[in-house]
Image (tube, rainbow, N blue to C red; front, side, top):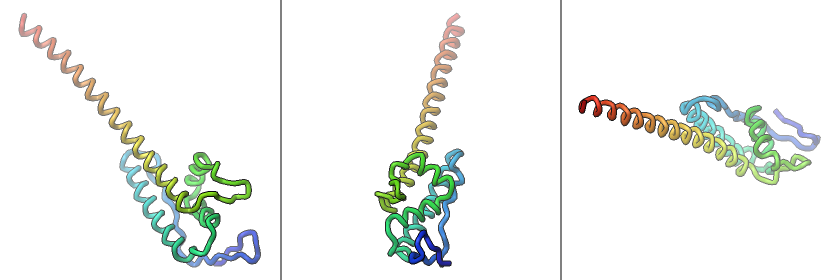
Length: 147
């Protein structure tokens, strides 16, 4: 299918499989987040292959526009919340598709790291509670043995 973007002389041949990002696992435990990371890696590899292949002659702005179409509603929400300052008034992107893909990858990695650090904090609290309880119980047992 040929798509006409704003100009009658501008046509992009879209006779290839369009990548789409599956945001399953965006909210969820570690399994969901690791699934999200795998989904992103698949999406990123597919997009890079298209940018080196059929879309290699397109401008950076067009490639960034394709990325924002392919990431879906959730990805566009993330983009507009995090990096809306990258968007110029005329919808020209000062960064290229590589930087945009890298920003999404960093966002996903940071989300995973925040979750893991939260789990580490919970484990530390749990260990402290266990130590305090064991000290209290041992003190009571020592007193009972002595009496």
